[in-house]
Length: 197
Image 1 (cartoon, rainbow, N blue to C red):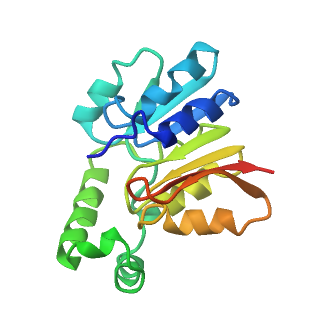
Image 2: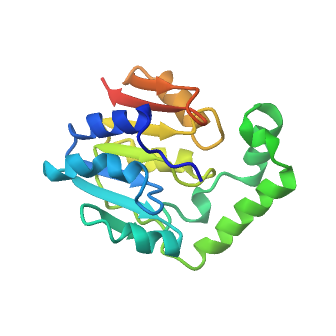
């Protein structure tokens, strides 16, 4: 797993998050990557929430004193990209996702859906964040944007040239309400930050 850490996306997260009141990080993992970009914002009084669905990672994330760690999934099974939409993306849009076999990605998606049965679902529904980082499951990015966009002033996306945030990147890029303030398509699978106009 490649962490967002001490690269130019990390710096952009660090800098822009200090303009926020509430940060929501989706996909905090152990808290040793992108989460660290928000520490200075926390020191200035910004509330930092970070979501992680895997228990072992959540345990480590929960040790970070400047973060409110949340265990569970941002969505329920209904929020997952459908298998048909996933297969269509895999067939029609050439990304690093296409390098994996269809059987493998079905297995990953099905494994995540099984995990949902064992953990809390829809854990971000009561959080009104004005800065959102979407970097969770490859199959939930679109639902996460729908859940968070109404209150957001900043939306940060990792994996913009891959299935996770490909559609979100194009949706925000084509919206007159949003202005792109950071973009690097060559960092891992690409990253961007948008600010509401």
